[in-house]
Image 1 (tube, rainbow, N blue to C red):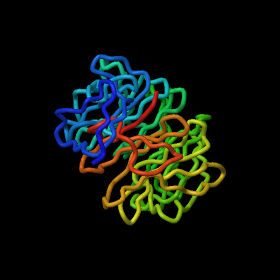
Image 2: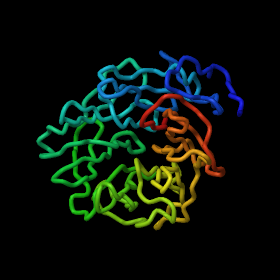
Image 3: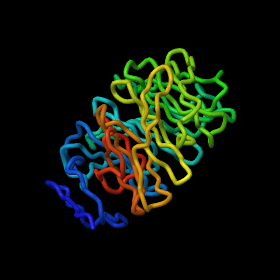
Length: 320
């Protein structure tokens, strides 16, 4: 059996439903309750109406996360690059709202944009918000007229704009390029077959297909593509015949050779999803390996199951 390595404050005890046998626990991650958040993870815990947001900073204890919301019904959090603000989707019945909340754990959520707004008639099912590099704008996915589209809105709720109304594709999640002028989004002809990567202009809605194939192994993007901070690579979670794994590829005018990073020999059907960059050479992701959802990290120069960073999480995002 592989020994459990516990570093600093990262002693994992009393976490129901989290099987840590055979895992290395990374000493990074953390942000104890009441602590400050500079850079780290935001994620969801709880099911159904109990879904609330939590934050853990790289410098603290991953077993004592800072709770950011108490109203529940939170989905798809993303943290701004300055680490000060989290955007997420709040759902109440058929209504979706984009909301923001400070990472201090002391502020109340503010509504940015609602599906009931007259600025977007017939809009519903908000998901996958992402901040631009300056933190002043959000791009997100919504449904309108039977199509999944990309939209943008300023973080103060102004200047809402549908981006992809004339595109022949439906869209999943998007990730900003470093220049803030474009996003890279998963796309396809149906929402169950998002096997394209498309570069979309945030100001104009222009579309440029980067790839209509995800390599020889990955079939579709499951949650999101993620552009590296320097813009040279993209990571995504790709569905395969044996589950979902994390892949990485050089990113230019076209998609370079795709490499599979994660694997779980002897464990079938593992779902490795929600990739985020932790710098330009390391990825973080969610995995249900061992029958529990935990956050892991892995170097893009290696492969395997990764190293445990934060236990018990859903829909994680790294930033700051």
